[in-house]
Length: 272
Image 1: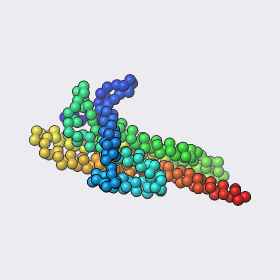
Image 2: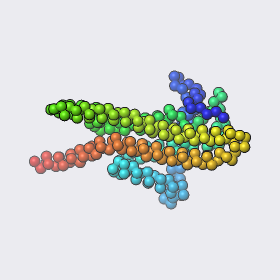
Image 3: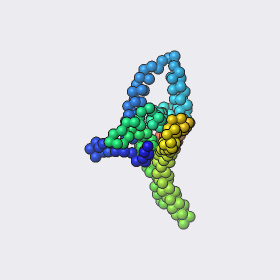
Image 4: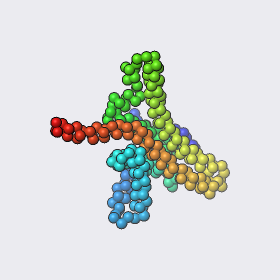
Protein backbone atom coordinates (compact mmCIF):
# COMPACT_ATOMS: atom_id res chain seq x y z
CA UNK A 1 0.00 0.00 0.00
CA UNK A 2 1.43 3.36 -1.06
CA UNK A 3 1.79 6.33 1.28
CA UNK A 4 2.23 9.60 -0.60
CA UNK A 5 2.98 12.97 0.97
CA UNK A 6 1.79 15.15 -1.97
CA UNK A 7 -1.72 14.73 -3.31
CA UNK A 8 -2.23 13.14 -6.71
CA UNK A 9 -3.45 15.39 -9.50
CA UNK A 10 -6.54 13.76 -11.00
CA UNK A 11 -7.36 16.23 -13.77
CA UNK A 12 -7.09 19.88 -14.77
CA UNK A 13 -9.81 22.50 -14.89
CA UNK A 14 -8.14 25.01 -17.18
CA UNK A 15 -4.86 25.91 -15.46
CA UNK A 16 -6.10 24.70 -12.06
CA UNK A 17 -5.10 21.17 -10.96
CA UNK A 18 -7.73 19.17 -9.08
CA UNK A 19 -6.15 16.73 -6.61
CA UNK A 20 -7.76 13.84 -4.78
CA UNK A 21 -7.70 15.82 -1.53
CA UNK A 22 -9.53 18.74 -3.19
CA UNK A 23 -12.10 16.33 -4.60
CA UNK A 24 -12.56 14.86 -1.11
CA UNK A 25 -13.14 18.35 0.28
CA UNK A 26 -15.91 18.93 -2.29
CA UNK A 27 -17.50 15.56 -1.47
CA UNK A 28 -17.43 16.32 2.27
CA UNK A 29 -18.85 19.81 1.73
CA UNK A 30 -21.75 18.55 -0.40
CA UNK A 31 -22.45 15.70 2.04
CA UNK A 32 -22.49 18.01 5.05
CA UNK A 33 -24.68 20.50 3.20
CA UNK A 34 -27.24 17.82 2.37
CA UNK A 35 -27.08 16.36 5.88
CA UNK A 36 -27.56 19.80 7.47
CA UNK A 37 -30.56 20.52 5.26
CA UNK A 38 -32.38 17.30 6.13
CA UNK A 39 -31.28 17.23 9.80
CA UNK A 40 -32.52 20.79 10.42
CA UNK A 41 -35.96 19.82 9.15
CA UNK A 42 -36.19 17.12 11.82
CA UNK A 43 -35.49 19.44 14.76
CA UNK A 44 -38.52 19.72 17.02
CA UNK A 45 -39.68 21.26 20.29
CA UNK A 46 -39.28 17.84 21.91
CA UNK A 47 -35.64 17.10 21.09
CA UNK A 48 -34.37 13.74 19.89
CA UNK A 49 -31.13 12.26 21.22
CA UNK A 50 -29.23 13.59 18.24
CA UNK A 51 -30.71 17.05 18.76
CA UNK A 52 -29.76 17.01 22.45
CA UNK A 53 -26.15 16.10 21.61
CA UNK A 54 -25.99 18.75 18.87
CA UNK A 55 -27.47 21.48 21.08
CA UNK A 56 -25.10 20.59 23.93
CA UNK A 57 -22.12 20.87 21.59
CA UNK A 58 -23.42 24.13 20.14
CA UNK A 59 -24.00 25.65 23.59
CA UNK A 60 -20.52 24.66 24.76
CA UNK A 61 -18.79 26.16 21.73
CA UNK A 62 -20.95 29.29 21.93
CA UNK A 63 -19.89 29.75 25.56
CA UNK A 64 -16.23 29.41 24.63
CA UNK A 65 -16.60 31.96 21.83
CA UNK A 66 -18.42 34.34 24.16
CA UNK A 67 -15.56 34.10 26.69
CA UNK A 68 -13.01 34.76 23.95
CA UNK A 69 -14.78 37.72 22.30
CA UNK A 70 -16.30 39.25 25.41
CA UNK A 71 -19.97 39.39 24.46
CA UNK A 72 -22.80 37.12 23.38
CA UNK A 73 -23.62 39.32 20.39
CA UNK A 74 -20.13 38.89 18.96
CA UNK A 75 -20.17 35.18 19.76
CA UNK A 76 -23.32 34.69 17.70
CA UNK A 77 -21.68 36.42 14.72
CA UNK A 78 -18.56 34.22 14.78
CA UNK A 79 -20.33 31.01 15.83
CA UNK A 80 -21.41 29.87 12.30
CA UNK A 81 -17.83 30.17 10.98
CA UNK A 82 -16.20 28.31 13.86
CA UNK A 83 -18.90 25.65 14.17
CA UNK A 84 -18.75 24.93 10.44
CA UNK A 85 -14.96 24.75 10.63
CA UNK A 86 -15.05 22.23 13.48
CA UNK A 87 -17.66 20.00 11.84
CA UNK A 88 -15.85 20.03 8.49
CA UNK A 89 -12.49 19.12 10.03
CA UNK A 90 -14.01 16.46 12.30
CA UNK A 91 -15.64 14.74 9.32
CA UNK A 92 -12.59 15.21 7.08
CA UNK A 93 -10.30 13.63 9.68
CA UNK A 94 -12.38 10.43 9.65
CA UNK A 95 -12.74 10.25 5.87
CA UNK A 96 -10.22 7.44 5.43
CA UNK A 97 -12.25 5.24 7.81
CA UNK A 98 -15.32 5.32 5.54
CA UNK A 99 -15.72 1.83 3.96
CA UNK A 100 -14.59 1.44 0.33
CA UNK A 101 -13.21 4.99 0.06
CA UNK A 102 -9.66 3.72 -0.43
CA UNK A 103 -10.76 1.26 -3.12
CA UNK A 104 -11.70 3.89 -5.70
CA UNK A 105 -8.86 4.80 -8.06
CA UNK A 106 -8.43 7.04 -11.07
CA UNK A 107 -5.42 6.77 -13.36
CA UNK A 108 -3.67 4.49 -10.92
CA UNK A 109 -4.03 6.97 -8.03
CA UNK A 110 -6.56 7.00 -5.18
CA UNK A 111 -9.63 8.93 -6.24
CA UNK A 112 -10.27 10.27 -2.75
CA UNK A 113 -7.87 11.14 0.07
CA UNK A 114 -8.27 12.44 3.61
CA UNK A 115 -8.19 16.15 2.90
CA UNK A 116 -6.56 17.10 6.22
CA UNK A 117 -3.63 14.76 5.47
CA UNK A 118 -2.64 17.20 2.70
CA UNK A 119 -0.57 20.14 3.98
CA UNK A 120 -1.89 22.46 1.27
CA UNK A 121 -5.44 21.91 2.53
CA UNK A 122 -4.67 22.54 6.21
CA UNK A 123 -2.55 25.56 5.25
CA UNK A 124 -5.52 26.93 3.30
CA UNK A 125 -7.79 26.60 6.33
CA UNK A 126 -5.21 28.33 8.53
CA UNK A 127 -4.70 31.13 5.99
CA UNK A 128 -8.47 31.74 5.82
CA UNK A 129 -8.62 32.23 9.60
CA UNK A 130 -5.54 34.46 9.87
CA UNK A 131 -6.37 36.58 6.81
CA UNK A 132 -9.99 36.95 7.90
CA UNK A 133 -8.90 38.24 11.30
CA UNK A 134 -6.78 40.95 9.66
CA UNK A 135 -9.48 41.87 7.16
CA UNK A 136 -11.95 42.41 10.01
CA UNK A 137 -9.42 44.42 12.01
CA UNK A 138 -8.51 46.57 8.99
CA UNK A 139 -12.17 47.23 8.20
CA UNK A 140 -12.73 48.54 11.74
CA UNK A 141 -9.57 50.55 12.37
CA UNK A 142 -7.04 50.37 9.51
CA UNK A 143 -4.48 52.86 10.79
CA UNK A 144 -4.46 51.46 14.30
CA UNK A 145 -4.13 47.89 13.07
CA UNK A 146 -1.28 48.70 10.70
CA UNK A 147 0.35 50.66 13.52
CA UNK A 148 0.39 47.50 15.65
CA UNK A 149 2.90 46.00 13.21
CA UNK A 150 4.69 49.00 11.67
CA UNK A 151 5.35 51.14 14.70
CA UNK A 152 6.60 54.46 13.35
CA UNK A 153 4.59 56.75 15.64
CA UNK A 154 7.24 56.65 18.45
CA UNK A 155 9.84 58.09 16.04
CA UNK A 156 7.87 61.35 15.89
CA UNK A 157 8.14 61.66 19.67
CA UNK A 158 11.90 61.13 19.91
CA UNK A 159 13.53 63.75 22.11
CA UNK A 160 16.66 61.91 23.25
CA UNK A 161 18.86 58.91 22.51
CA UNK A 162 16.81 56.90 25.03
CA UNK A 163 13.61 57.71 23.14
CA UNK A 164 15.31 56.70 19.88
CA UNK A 165 16.35 53.36 21.37
CA UNK A 166 12.83 52.69 22.60
CA UNK A 167 11.42 53.61 19.20
CA UNK A 168 13.83 51.25 17.42
CA UNK A 169 12.99 48.49 19.88
CA UNK A 170 9.26 49.00 19.35
CA UNK A 171 9.76 48.96 15.58
CA UNK A 172 11.70 45.67 15.81
CA UNK A 173 9.00 44.14 18.01
CA UNK A 174 6.38 45.15 15.46
CA UNK A 175 8.30 43.27 12.75
CA UNK A 176 8.48 40.25 15.06
CA UNK A 177 4.70 40.42 15.37
CA UNK A 178 4.51 40.01 11.58
CA UNK A 179 6.66 36.89 11.90
CA UNK A 180 4.27 35.76 14.64
CA UNK A 181 1.32 35.97 12.23
CA UNK A 182 3.19 33.70 9.81
CA UNK A 183 3.91 31.36 12.71
CA UNK A 184 0.17 31.16 13.41
CA UNK A 185 -0.40 29.75 9.93
CA UNK A 186 2.43 27.24 10.33
CA UNK A 187 1.27 26.23 13.80
CA UNK A 188 -2.36 25.67 12.82
CA UNK A 189 -1.67 23.88 9.55
CA UNK A 190 1.29 21.69 10.55
CA UNK A 191 -0.30 20.50 13.82
CA UNK A 192 -3.44 19.26 12.07
CA UNK A 193 -1.59 17.86 9.05
CA UNK A 194 1.09 16.12 11.12
CA UNK A 195 -1.35 14.35 13.44
CA UNK A 196 -3.69 13.12 10.71
CA UNK A 197 -0.95 12.10 8.26
CA UNK A 198 1.02 10.32 10.99
CA UNK A 199 -2.11 8.45 12.08
CA UNK A 200 -2.74 7.23 8.54
CA UNK A 201 0.88 6.12 8.15
CA UNK A 202 0.72 4.21 11.44
CA UNK A 203 -2.38 2.26 10.37
CA UNK A 204 -0.94 1.54 6.90
CA UNK A 205 2.42 0.36 8.26
CA UNK A 206 0.83 -1.95 10.82
CA UNK A 207 -1.58 -3.38 8.24
CA UNK A 208 1.31 -4.00 5.81
CA UNK A 209 3.60 -5.91 8.18
CA UNK A 210 2.15 -9.28 7.31
CA UNK A 211 -0.96 -10.94 5.92
CA UNK A 212 -2.49 -11.58 9.35
CA UNK A 213 -1.93 -7.97 10.53
CA UNK A 214 -4.33 -6.60 7.91
CA UNK A 215 -7.45 -7.53 9.87
CA UNK A 216 -7.59 -7.35 13.66
CA UNK A 217 -4.31 -5.68 14.63
CA UNK A 218 -5.02 -2.23 13.05
CA UNK A 219 -8.45 -1.93 14.76
CA UNK A 220 -7.18 -0.40 18.08
CA UNK A 221 -5.07 2.06 16.12
CA UNK A 222 -8.08 2.98 14.00
CA UNK A 223 -10.02 3.81 17.15
CA UNK A 224 -7.04 5.86 18.34
CA UNK A 225 -7.00 7.68 14.99
CA UNK A 226 -10.77 8.22 15.30
CA UNK A 227 -10.39 9.79 18.74
CA UNK A 228 -7.39 11.87 17.63
CA UNK A 229 -9.36 13.18 14.64
CA UNK A 230 -12.10 14.63 16.85
CA UNK A 231 -9.55 16.06 19.29
CA UNK A 232 -7.61 17.75 16.48
CA UNK A 233 -10.81 19.27 15.05
CA UNK A 234 -11.64 20.69 18.48
CA UNK A 235 -8.08 21.99 19.05
CA UNK A 236 -7.92 23.60 15.59
CA UNK A 237 -11.25 25.36 16.20
CA UNK A 238 -10.27 26.63 19.66
CA UNK A 239 -6.92 27.93 18.40
CA UNK A 240 -8.63 29.62 15.45
CA UNK A 241 -11.07 31.22 17.89
CA UNK A 242 -8.22 32.53 20.04
CA UNK A 243 -6.32 33.88 17.04
CA UNK A 244 -9.44 35.65 15.76
CA UNK A 245 -10.31 37.08 19.16
CA UNK A 246 -6.73 38.16 19.85
CA UNK A 247 -6.61 40.14 16.61
CA UNK A 248 -10.07 41.74 16.48
CA UNK A 249 -11.31 42.00 20.07
CA UNK A 250 -9.43 45.21 20.88
CA UNK A 251 -10.76 46.85 17.71
CA UNK A 252 -14.30 45.65 18.46
CA UNK A 253 -14.07 47.07 21.99
CA UNK A 254 -12.98 50.43 20.56
CA UNK A 255 -15.80 50.35 18.01
CA UNK A 256 -18.38 49.62 20.73
CA UNK A 257 -17.03 52.48 22.84
CA UNK A 258 -17.40 54.86 19.90
CA UNK A 259 -20.96 53.75 19.28
CA UNK A 260 -21.81 54.11 22.97
CA UNK A 261 -20.32 57.61 23.12
CA UNK A 262 -22.30 58.93 20.13
CA UNK A 263 -25.72 59.03 21.90
CA UNK A 264 -24.13 60.72 24.90
CA UNK A 265 -22.47 63.31 22.67
CA UNK A 266 -25.75 63.89 20.82
CA UNK A 267 -27.61 64.31 24.12
CA UNK A 268 -25.07 66.87 25.35
CA UNK A 269 -25.38 68.76 22.04
CA UNK A 270 -29.17 68.85 22.38
CA UNK A 271 -28.92 70.13 25.93
CA UNK A 272 -26.51 72.86 24.87
